[in-house]
Image 1 (tube, rainbow, N blue to C red):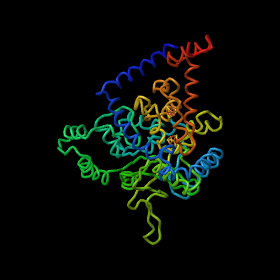
Image 2: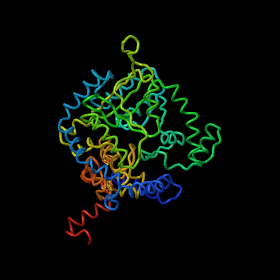
Image 3: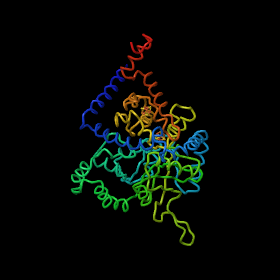
Image 4: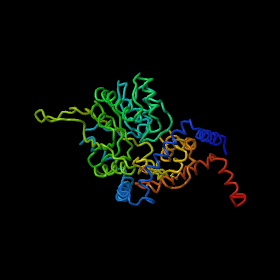
Length: 434
Ligand code: SF4
Ligand code: SF4
């Protein structure tokens, strides 16, 4: 094992030791995470709950979804080209194709102009593209709007968390104590009171003060250029309407053939984790009116400008060179693989990268930052159970991608000492148990 391998191994070991201590951030996350996984798992585990309607819904559409994703991958050039053309010509979006992350960052900063504040909701692909880091470096104030992310900002939480519920680990007492400390406001230690507080204060700000907002896209229809966004809080509806400029940063894999496929992706994302999103937005143009003498004017009550930055970076290359992580292009980001992952359940946010918890985010870290980053995320904590692959609604073989990462790590002498010993016994003794 290399020195680097040993260092990474010890880093993970230290985190696992911390997990044993009840007060540690890892233990606190793990406790609530296990409960969340059990609740979700019970309701969609095909092997134990065949009657579950959510699972039936997913299974009914799974084959079509996989075919649709494969069709996209096999015809990626045509779909990207068509989508860019339609969005620009028909939808009146301002569209960019960023070949790599540097380009995406540059475009974003140019579009941001003199604005120093940005309101955002779930924008994993902006994070992937390094845009969030660029904004921080340039001292742009990033205002989260999903309550979970707002709470993470409030409590200055910088551990990896579950993207779909990033604040679930905080107790109501922790939250109200921080609100009292920061805003000198006393509220009851109840979820309703906390929600009411943000509704009465932050909602007003969102409705009045947004110049630029940032979101991702759950799916983009190549046929008519419509953008689909799913949410349950209403923050996406607000920040995509009550703004001057709405910037969407999305990887090209978000493109699907048509608007029905886009809606299907959105519904699958909701149903597979048994969440009924309150809103699905379909954005097909900037706000506009033709009510004055039939003359079309953009920027009525909603966003005056909609900017779409489609990011390629590793994606096209993965298809053309048939790279082992090509399956990432099929991912719709439903996060159900996190909920069924044995490593994730056992080790919570230790089996995680800066992009979020679970194996899918470890592959993401490898793509952006290399094999050492993946090992530091706890790559070897993966048990190889294959639950992720079995559950994925779009046929992403995550277990195989993780296996490939372990192979690369091993070739680079980064695998843990116990596995090295195991390997030596096989080679020398022809018996791993001697
Ligand atoms: S890999 Fe599959 S299960 Fe995991 S987030 Fe992506 S689509 Fe969902
Ligand atoms: S194979 Fe690894 S990543 Fe997939 S569910 Fe099992 S432990 Fe998690």
